[in-house]
Amino acid sequence: MWRGLSALVTQAAWAPLRLCARCSTSAESLVPSSTIFALSSGQGRCAIAVIRTSGPASGLALRSLTALQEPPPARRACLRLLRHPCSGEPLDRSLVLWFPGPQSFTGEDCVEFHVHGGPAVVSGVLQALGSVPGLRPAEAGEFTRRAFAHGKLSLTEVEGLADLIRAETEAQRRQALRQLDGELSQLCQGWAKTLTKALAYVEAYIDFGEDDNLEEGVLEQADREVRALEVALGSHLRDARRGQRLLSGANVVVTGPPNAGKSSLVNLLSQKPVSIVSPEPGTTRDVLETPVDLAGFPVLLSDTAGLREGVGAVEQEGVRRARHRLEQADIILGVLDASDLASSSSCSFLDTVVTPLLAQSQDSGGQRLLLLLNKSDLLSANAPACDIALPPHLLLSCHTGAGMDSLLQALKTELAAVCGDPSTGPPLLTRVRHQYHLQGCLDALGHYQLATDLALAAEALRQARRQLNHLTGGGGTEEILDLIFQDFCVGK
Image 1: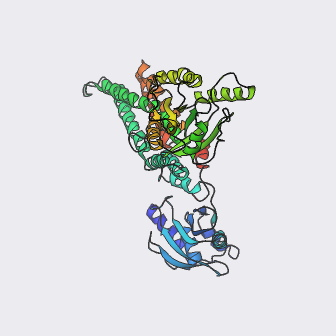
Image 2: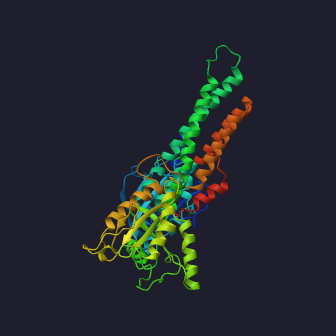
Image 3: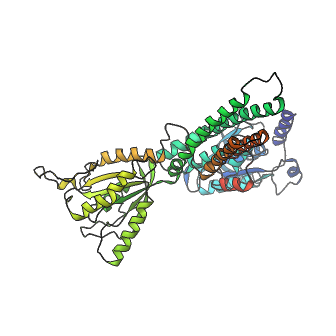
């Protein structure tokens, strides 16, 4: 039946119709509705621009602009002269590609026009498509939403696609590509199968518990399945913050006593003059933030006021803000002057900041610290050794750049621990929505364990399975879907 309908639609798309919407009213009633078009390659002048359509009238759109009597071979580029359907005026020489559904991105008939990227050419082709009966401009994210509606992408894969488009660092690209490839979706589907199996065991016992043909240990098997799933869910939820940091950026805060070289380090890491550098102590009096790509990871790098007491009111406010920013840090770069370690400010920093952080870092969930001894170029080879016991540290010179490679390697290790390594391990949870539904699933499994009635236990398993279904897009509300798809640009 459906193949017959598809054939009829294709025949209608290629029928010899009058093509100008302004000149023909009979054609419009024969053309299927809801076919969209948009520029997909972004705004602005470029060498090549890609304009695409999706919907049952895509074949008609292709015939309208190229005067082809038959569709070109599927998924093969053909060079064609594009003309306006009403006036016949030449628009551009274009590569055209025909993607008959369901073997297309959206699952519908699609056409791509690869035209020259001048604004006049793009505008002319868009206006020509707008004159074809049954076509309308696409809304933001509508192509991807149609792919989701036709089962081409799960909701987590849609989010992976959005993340891939927005990715600015290597780690973000790798994570987004894994999610787009369906790793998180497949993981959730595996968990859902486990719940379905456990639910089948429980319902079999409810229906056939007194039947001698029912094999022994059915409920015990369901309990084992649920306990194993609880462990897996708990492990992923404990790592949930890592995926969110990978998406939004880890907070790296540079701190230390005045004149230790913090601002020089921030400028060096960001490769731009973010902070004023001066030999005068207390130059930085506020928190200065800049987003940077460090070792392939997204980072929000913060320069802070030097930590000291007994100064003016303005600088004290800067110190207060610096301490507050320290509390929000994922990774702290503590900077000391290697040539002035015996000073009271350096000793105070070691006692009040470094020592507590090192004690806290023994917990894997705590803040992470890298202690840096800057100005190593000022150290004399014949200088007496420092008698201050120092924790593990890195020698660095912001002036000469010595030690920067070691610092970047250490930062890469710390950032991989904080954000997760997208190249290895299980897929990360990059959104609060993921965490919410997995927590709901885990809570439902907790109700299963506490249930004293088998009917309630079965309902708890159904609720747990519904939460996983919501995560991958089944049963999602329109409001949630709208929020996800509005992040896409028009044409995607």
